[in-house]
Length: 374
Image (cartoon, rainbow, N blue to C red; front, side, top):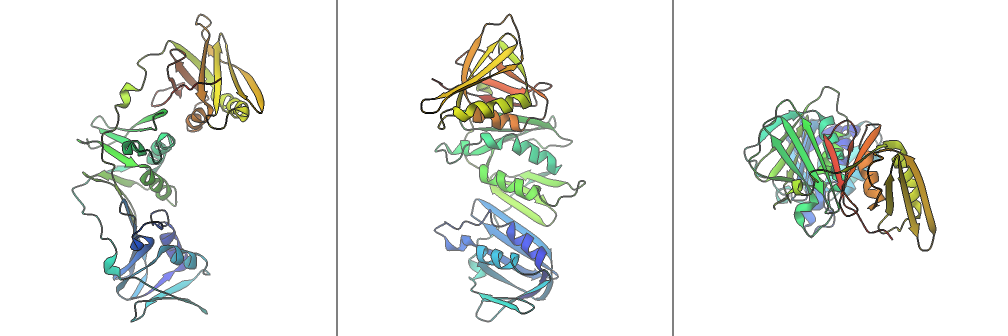
């Protein structure tokens, strides 16, 4: 194999694989990337950890066709530190890869390309076009509530439903909070099976869609029986879905709440940040006390002291006073992705969860479970 390629283009291509490559795996091959130069004037770079498979391609001058498999981290560090300009990649008879630009030369050992895991079997996939900003928005509104390394494997991903009424719905929960968002789209195929996209896959989708996409560019999203598929120009990502039954999230969302407070979002964020400075670090617990026209937030720490702050809110004067303990961080995560000036906090009693959503719609809601705060 021998290829001439622009340094900046190659660096972008290789850097995208770094989140996929599994350096801690007991399978050494998963620390590598596969460079495929078997097409004229184009190369492809692939990486996988068995659960995710990414392949990106770009234009290049292919002098001699071939494939090479090399350590992803080393290759990325070398390429990103080269000066701008053309870079030559050349494989010798022993299989090593020479990297040359100007007076700079590297030679790195390579692995047999035939040992690199092959692309997953592509079952029938129903793709639909979606605006990249819509996917990013949907993920950002739910991923913070998705569990990490929970023994209940189905909680380590976000649940996705596609409805024939042109809706996409995503739900994430870690057992202590739940985030749900719905979005209307022009054309959505109905899914006849449950879909749980793992947290790592959602992170990689976010990275790939957050870079270098023009305003009018569309991407394609699709699902097969075992994988989620994301395609954009010159790039594809395949994510193995989590097997299992996602909990019935509708049972977690309160049907009705008798107490509703409308609160300025920015003021609530600032108050929670200030008051939680003296909360117990393990729980970030704060008490919220609702009374006619006001909301008091307070915290205490046995070794540090206590703090309280009162906000003017819209809370019915005819309602009873209500005091509930919550994890301040959970509230801050939910409020960070809401854009409206005001939010509604809906509660039933001291032992029930709080439903948080923008004051002007319920397209997005976050359900936060109460905690004991001394």
